[in-house]
Length: 406
Ligand SMILES: [Zn+2]
Image 1 (tube, rainbow, N blue to C red):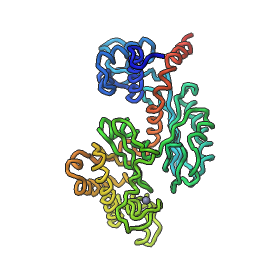
Image 2 (cartoon, rainbow, N blue to C red):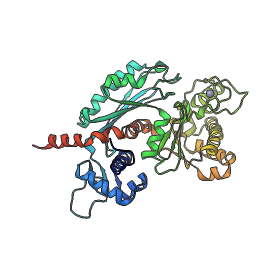
Image 3 (tube, helix red, strand yellow):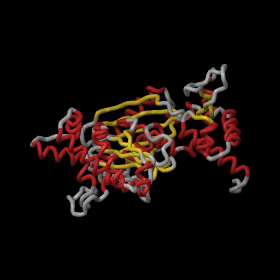
Image 4 (spheres, helix red, strand yellow):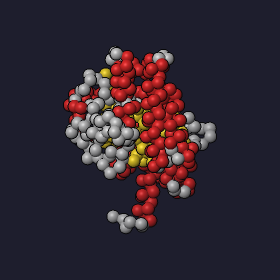
């Protein structure tokens, strides 16, 4: 064991920082690595040269493709893509998606399946295990080099790994979902809720790239948020941070499913909007029906979405005062309403947040659409698995060389 603070342990910890940053950034430059790690350009260059000699880092051309040699020296680098893989699983209300990516962030295979309403944990995990086999086969990736699996669920996830009670997938409440999935796949599994994973994906690859402080709003049948500060997810003491749907707007309002009164969700969730319009139109509408009619010009549906945007803006204004984010990224199916929802939301934030917080923030639609949670599950592995693989990577690299030589 090295003494903490010795030159050797400092070199080792700087090397680990560079490897973890490469894992998060995918294809990148030495200059960006230096900014991201806070290390000097020369320290980064020395460490990268060492990693290249070990075969852990490869050159990439300006388009991010494998550098062919000849021409200008390649400016970009990435971890050797074949050295490890990350798998993401997104358990949605009516779908299941599985994807596999390499360490240069290239998506190699993806599978989607429709699921019956209210499928339970056992059924979901059995389907996921089949689909993991399919993506491994389709990509040709070696299952032994999977660094881990990220999984997302549309419900509260406690830091202990236990799924809280959820109106969206009630059959999962109380299960230790990551442990069950890990046992079935014989792989390490990290669990996150859908809003947190959407936040990670949009901050890594989407509309929140390079934002200093990002809040991802998942606006669908329920309302949740994921908060990323300095590139890291902020989860709070027990993993509950971001429950913006339960911001209290009226202490004498309707009782919410959480037990409190007048929560944002009782006014502005997809469920509340669909119920409001179903009542006044005398027919049963889903959120998708409302969105379709609103985009088609129906005045009542447009009004309901605009009011929802204003209500959501009240809660977002409060959040802006507390967290001062640079970007609010809107995802979830309500995002299909576009500026019908976003303009009143922006207006509401401008009216209610203190001026400096309102000036700093942009409210934009997410780039990743319905794939945000799936990609976020992969990002979760890239965030969490850093130290694990950097310790064993040189050994893995030797094995890779042996495999490919005649
Ligand atoms: Zn509530």
